[in-house]
Amino acid sequence: MAKRRSNRYRYKKTKLILLGTSFLVLMGVGGIFVEYRASGYSVAEILNYLDRRVEGHPRLEKWTAPVFARIRAWDGESEFQAQAAQPFLIPPPPPRWGEVPLKGGEERALIEPYLPGGWLIPPSSVHRILHVGPAEPIKSISVAASMAQDGDVVQIDAGDYHGDVVASWGQKDLLIQGVGGNARLFADGRSAEGKALWVVRGGRIRIENIDFMNTQVSDRNGAGIRFEKGDLWVRNCLFFANENGLLTSDEENSSLVIENSEFAYNGAGDGFSHDLYVGKLKSLVVLASYFHHANVGHLFKSRAIRNDILYNRLTDEMGGRASYELDFPNGGTALVLGNIIQQGTDTENSTVISYGEEGMSGPDNVLYLASNTLVNDKEGAGAFLRVPKAGARVVSVNNLLVGYGEYHVSAGLVSSNDLKVDWQVFYRPLRQDYRLEGPVGERLHYETPSALLAPGLDLIPRAEPVVPRQVSVLRRSPVYPGALQILAP
Image 1: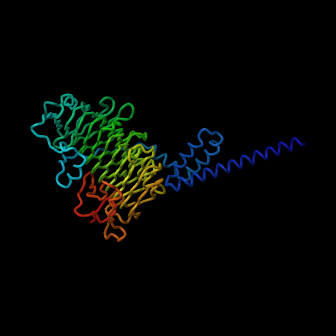
Image 2: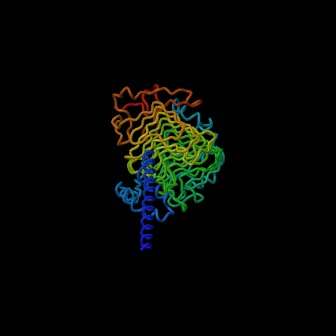
Image 3: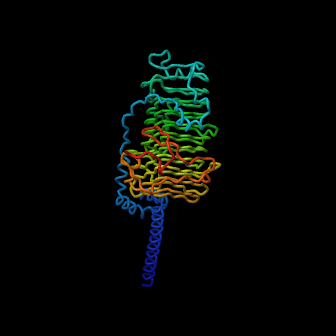
């Protein structure tokens, strides 16, 4: 009898211990859930985090699995997973563009500070010209690449090119340009060195009026351009349906300038390939360009020491599945000025701009956000900016924010005249037309930022982005916060 009572006592004690442990686990999970939810993460992201935390603990996994499954079903996670399992639909590419002449006057002043003077000089009789085209003596781009010498100009007639289009360029002071419009290059399963349509590792090289299409390689990292060394200026180019749009090395003495270019439907769908992926370069400048519809990866990812992101459209739009719109994983100095940045409803990640997520490695870690229009179309979750690590300074002025979310900055945020607004202030937000609709209320006024906020930098916008990948110089001082000064008609 005494033995039976003893067993019954031990059973009750064990049951109480298990109930108490379950209660503590539930409280811990609930606390994590509440904390993460307050940080703007979606339910799916929180559950994925909790899955990782209980992994390797069989008893906890057995207890939490049905609970998490029920929450996922309640939150519509199964619908999200079904949607993610659908193929990433890539439409026909846009029509080829005509040539975009070098800027002059005030527009030239926007890009000139970032370029050595020689890059602004058009080709002349002092340059040897190699002309490529169906009716030209040189019919193959790869042959032209093998013939080119330092200081040459390679001109490619406008049109679609299949077959022998892959090339490696190691020359210095080289200009490669489409003439009569853009030359459109289709990889068709080919690649240079198993890396990209074109591999660039020369000195100062300018590439303009070229479209890079459909690059795929065995390691799922195929790029339109693989930039490995030197100084590269890309103008009026399209990167479409590649595994990576443009991918660089970590060469710290190299620089990259991108102007009037479009990056669309790039990404292998693995989350490690992006519209644009820049390594630890000395500097990156992106001006008047258009990034959209990435496949699971980011629209823009840069580890460069210095980043100037000026007057662009980074909008994932309907059907896009990008994670971050802007990602600076290692910090650095970043000026993000006058951009339209929009997160779509089908995003794989609820954060719009991420800075320093993998730790700060730059000599200076400062993020300047000025006169941007930041849009989050994802319902019920989101962060316009996430800076999870200490050691950075964030200066944010005259930005317009619309949709769910806020800034999540661990420390060092200076914010001035950043305004949350409703959708009604914009003309056609469902079509990514974020012009303000008049009359504009007194609340939406521009405040000139103090020069002390950004020593040596200008936080006042001098232009605004124009659809699809152009820029318009402002004819007066800014009047409104956000990226656009011209009101809707």
